[in-house]
Image (cartoon, rainbow, N blue to C red; front, side, top):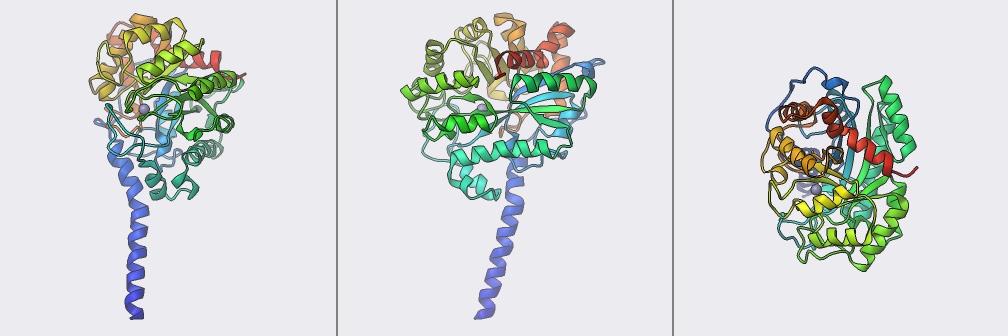
Length: 384
Ligand SMILES: [Zn+2]
């Protein structure tokens, strides 16, 4: 009898070890595929572009060592260096409903707790959205500490100026910033915004795939606007210099932000209804208002954003936005590692430059689109 129990126990432990060893990596590999693999051709002056940047990736969601190069997923430091990338925003996905879609999602289920468990993250992250968010923030800071000075996290203007100066001497330096996809990590308590600020969060998308306590989502059940608490939230964000990200916000939420907030806003990863009409994408009216406020629009790389799957589709939307609101207000907002099959990983960034050239953009214009605009936006809007 004892022998049978021992065999069963060993069998269970072997299965558990296999689960924790293989399931997180299997999910990462199968969710974050690329259609084409590099190396990708670069035009002659590509590596001289001073500041290539991207407004949105979800790399922190996956159990991957950012400091090592991988042949799966989309973003890690060695691949950023290959692509001459100076700056990447790392956004935190903290709660994703089961059966996620862009039309309508209730907020009463969550797949991220299970993922945190499968990745063997600390037990407080399995049940608390706030704790798993703070854990992901700490993970990025820990990568910076272990990077031997190659990577740093930007949290204020001073740090960004210093990074720009240091990178002029060493093009292998890269940097990151933290943002949230949805305000649900605040766990219905405005006081938690101070903790997010202290952890380095510098932009917040008000709602992700479901309506939350603060704001309606473009993919929620009600798709309402800002709640009373949501209005307080954007006021407090403004006082802390945390930028509002309108990605995933419902039409009503976007209208309310324009009503209750005066300053610039960004849209970290999006497409436009004018070219690719769906629930997810920005209307011309909202685009024009973002332009009037000297905001920033990050154009995505995935199919529901740009109604295409390659660099040409993204470049076409960039041109649409630049023509509507100006070349100083458009950027890249890839959504790499966002559980989509992308055309290419971060090393494919040169393909976008090639497509922008074909559309007639000059080198000066391309340098703005590929990162200069992101640099200048945060030099204007980060805390001192
Ligand atoms: Zn997103």
